Image 1: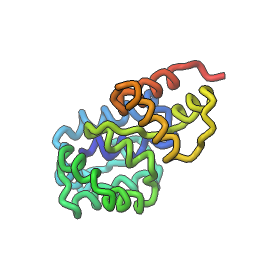
Image 2: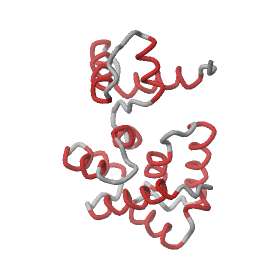
Image 3: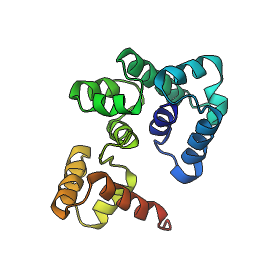
Image 4: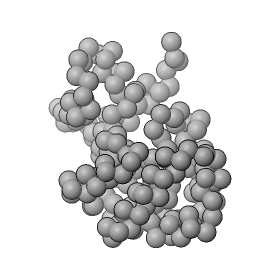
Length: 173
């Protein structure tokens, strides 16, 4: 769960493969016991998460702690707990109240725990724009991707990941 929380929070505005993935993998290797919210919070209390993640970004570090605290207070300890918890709209709203957590982060958390979510980011926006889609609002783009996946008979998260992979691997102009 430590890796899930950190991945979701630190991915914002970062190059995933170069910056995020190495830090998340290092966290998993260094804190393998941080697989529940309870054990992750215990590790954070005893050790320096900032040093492990190699970041001093205070907002992101504070958001990681706040998300872990919110989940603990809500009785969420495992990936299965979080997947079920996210299905309740009021819980998504509680996450959105955490400074540094936005719509994409909440949807991405759901993906990380095995849900089939569409987390609209810069890559999905660029793909839609290149396809002539004029919608720009997060909910509108998410709905378009979800409906497209449904009509094509594809998993929503699978379509999102395919578009993200394609767009993130393209050379930048």
